[in-house]
Length: 268
Image (cartoon, rainbow, N blue to C red; front, side):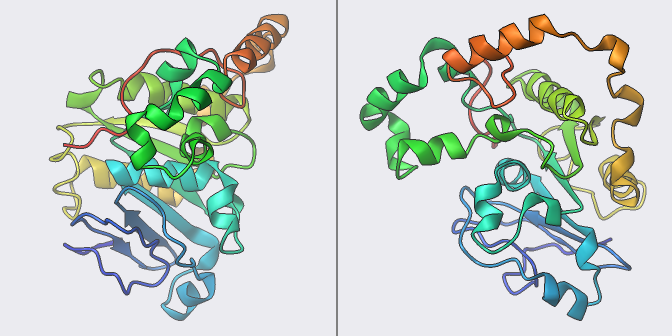
């Protein structure tokens, strides 16, 4: 994995976003390709797997890594098939997703208080109407609503100083738990530092964040293997009851009860 101090808009297989922040991507090295994305929405630029091979990478080992607002985008690409489908791909074409430094269920607080129909009625007067073209686009932007067996292996990375405010650890742990329940590889890793300095030295060989990424890239299917639920720990009726209740209140696709947690994107 090689580090570059600024995002290169011409980088093959990068995912272009209209308001990309100054950040970094890790370029193809050996048999992997890793790209960090940043910004606040996803553009229609295609992800061209054929160009990965031409650049010396392996299109079967394409990873997406996002930090801060890019964390949210990376999670959306892995969870909501809509965005990759627009360029003829699916989440299964990704070897893995790394989401670092954001909450992963931005609509939980709203869907706890109101039904989807109530939120739709309130949408024209909401402050988010200027950010998202439609209410349905806002729903599509919440990765926790699309968790399922279609998702690639996922690693949630959290800086130690931002575990609780906003509730990045709480939402990240819930996100991973639901993936494990769907029998998908997933894990949470806590690294030293704060929101920004936890990623500031990623090019250094002894950096903990770098080590976490490389471990995941080396064997993404092993993510969370020691924490996967056993058949004896699964429950039946309570889960079905929770699924119905969450559906009534507009909760996630796996029917987990919603909790009032945090803003959409944590970005300092």
